[in-house]
Image (tube, rainbow, N blue to C red; front, side, top):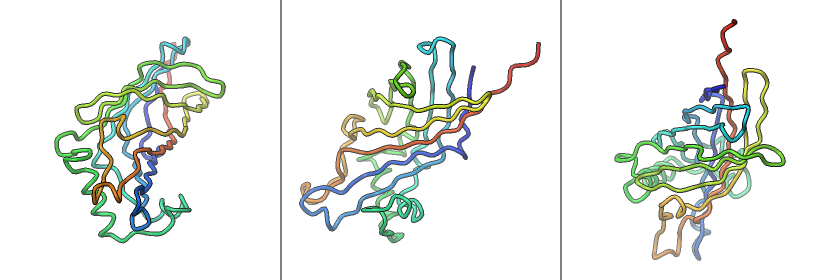
Length: 194
């Protein structure tokens, strides 16, 4: 059965931390989006299930004040518009995501396997001209034609072929490790009556 993602009811959060000897003058960042598109298909045999998602990188939102406040801790302090705009330009620039030449990040299930409290998706991640693999634990619950999925995991930017942003020969930089969190809502189309 195929489940289509409800983008407006789904969200992805990425948490990036300042690093380096001058980290106190840097900022940690919350990157969010509600623009993920895609689908999941479930089979009676779990190993025959799969997924495909695409994310337009231009739809990534940098340091939304409400999201920073909700994250709390090192993220709680709001950043001004100039800081948010500058971070977004660097993120989408040719040394990072290069959104002008590579507008989409693609995720495709290579394997789905059972876990104690859900499933683990082995994802093929296509970003820029680089392919990498990520294992993502997912908690999910199905209620008829509705599928809810959520999870949290960490990855390294270098695993995705990205070089973390750095200034002053690395004295101030963004840490390689990124924490990701997601909440997805998907709906299927009911099978026609026989």
